[in-house]
Structure formats: structure tokens, C-alpha cells
Image 1 (cartoon, rainbow, N blue to C red):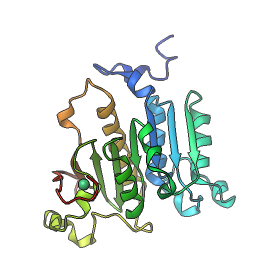
Image 2 (image 1 turned 180 degrees about the vertical axis):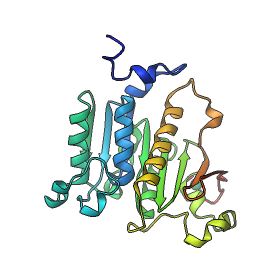
Image 3 (image 1 turned 30 degrees about the vertical axis):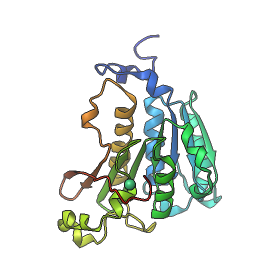
Length: 254
Ligand SMILES: [Zn+2]
């Protein structure tokens, strides 16, 4: 194949790039909203061939400022988010298989989650996040993203690391975020009607997928990943802060 014929040629030029574990990954994406759209887009561009996408919701006009796969027609026809992303994603990348599941993540059984190599949490509410966290823990690494306005977070939960619940239950964490207090409780990212823009959304989704690469490629330095850590991004100040999340002994998940 000529150098301009192979879709993945340019990324294979990165030193020690391992395409096989990327292409063959079996990936779960929970949430087909703003982060879910961007995460799926980036996974497809990286050559991931097997994605399962969970979302029960329909497209509305207010999604269109940050969801690359949605159109006015999708909103007008009240189309299901997971269905639209799957169809359009496979149209663009013929070698990929995206399976939409039209359910709430809380409706899925525990053993459903163990068949994936990596899970992405692209959710907008805490209950669903905690359900996913509890069901993936010890089985499937989880990459969680969240945004509100110019702020975003990424947290990676490894098989034995601290988890989402370790971080959100720790109220004394708050003092670390004093400078962010003007925007209120940033950590939980729980209100689906939070302010949201495409720039923050793209950055956080890209960081999530970049962590996926570190989990899947042996050639990348493990010490530099976000497993057991919490990254906070502030787009107004161009700041990235990374905190280690303590594994709480009294965490109900482990
Ligand atoms: Zn925990």
C-alpha cells in the first residue's frame, strides 16, 4: 500500500507506535453526548474497530454546538444519539463496527462490563458515573471525563487504583480547589444543563482518548499515565493540574 493510501500511515510514523493493540481493542463508550461524540470520533480516527456505545437519549438542537455527528434533521426527527453516532461513524470509517445500546447504564448487568478492554465514561450525571465505576472496578480500566464551561476533568481508574467514588466522597479535597470555588462545586460535574462549549469538550475528550493510548500501548511510559490520578483543566487560565487520588480504605467499591 502506498504511503498516501493507508489511512493510518501518519500515526504509524510515531516512534514505537503499536497499531495492533489499538485496532483490536474492544472499547465501551458510555454516553453519546458531547464527550461521547468526540471520543468516538477520535477512536475511529486512531483505527479502533470495535466500539459499543450506550445512550438512551435523543438528539436536541442544544446538542449541536458541540456534537460533531449530530444535525438539525437528527433533532427534528428525535433520533437516538447512540444510533446516529453509530451510523455516521461507520459511514466515515467502513472498517469499524459500532454497536449502539439504547439503555441507561444502570440497566446493564455486572458481567456486561467485563468483556471490554477499556471503558469511557462520557456521562453528565453522578449516579450513572458511580454505577459504571462500581461495575468496571477490578475488571475494566475506566477513563472518566467531565466538563463545565471552561473547566474540565479527566480521571483514570485502573484495576486496583483509587476510583471515582474515592475522589468525589472526599470532601476535604475541596481545599485543593479553592481558586476554582467561584464556579461552585466543580468536582461532581452532575448537572446535565451545565454551561458547555466545544473547545473544552474537544480538549477533554482528546485527553481521555490519549490516556486510552497509554493503557493499550506497552511502548508508552506507564508512569506518565493518569491511573489513580485526577487532571483538572482550566481553559481560562491555560492551566492543567494533576492530583493523585488517595485510595480510600472505606470506599464502598473496593
Ligand atoms: Zn474507591
